[in-house]
Image 1: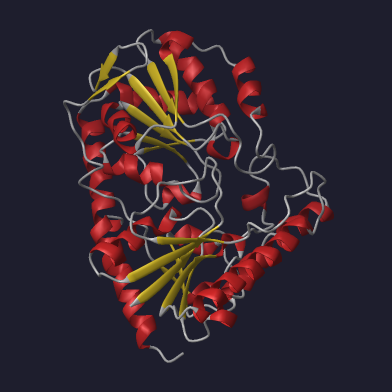
Image 2: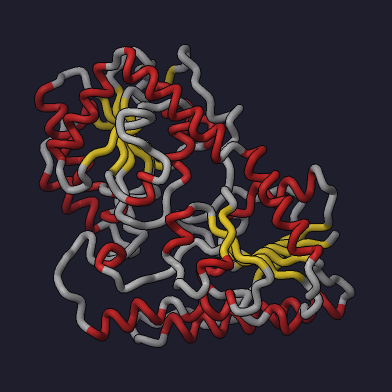
Length: 409
């Protein structure tokens, strides 16, 4: 079978599926991508033929225009359709196309491949609800800004229109889509490699200065793509400052870069510098490790005494699920995407996103350990085994693929 993927930062969420289709199912797999390299990039999948689109599109101008994103979406979708038509003329036509709808890049791909079945990955839909847009700032939003938010859905809706099957990775993410679309979306997890993300009591992690940390150290971990308000960077740092002031043994390992990836300040390091000016942390016990390779990242999770994951009501990060799979004692924000997986004091601890004192108190509970915390760690791993293990994810995707292939076009 011939399978095509569309993702600006391929492989992204399609890494596991693409590798499965290549290595186990022996399908012919290609991927259309945008050729972008930044903090959202992910490691390539060996054996997938890559086709870049949109390289002919002029760079964006600095001015902010309401229709800039819509114009870019149309240009990119047309560029992709033309690349696909060239592929068709060469004799390569896919049976199935998986596309990430976030950028709308595959909106016109059905014009090039009308015979193909289209599976659409529904990561997020931008709502103007208070929970979605006013969580960090409850002030009323002017009509122009509200319209700008709604315009971000035009690419998504354009891509969804030609879908034979719609999928979302979590119930919360599915729930963000309009009521008229929601019943058509199937929940299918991305999956976690439970063998790789597994506990190892004897694990150690070497700091840049050569010191080694292990599970018996009081290690607080925090993982995010950047220093992002959406991921609670400031309340985490405030809580860390409180902890370090009263506990001389607390070490913090912070993974990710200094960039803001979501919302206000996008693309800058301003938030990182603002936060660092406002907190009194011990630099000798606060280790900004940047982006690590997967094995080193996994080792950080293995030695974690308390892993903090904070998020506004938004896309759930893989890092939270991977930390649970590794048996971490997770302190998560008491927000809807986190509550879908963490039950307070059963398989993790929930804390108020806006309350550093509460976050610090929950971290201390995890650091102090004991039978309840150890049971919580085991339950966290069991949760992922039962709901998000890689094998379960692939079985679910295979079931949905068989269903869509059996349906008439």
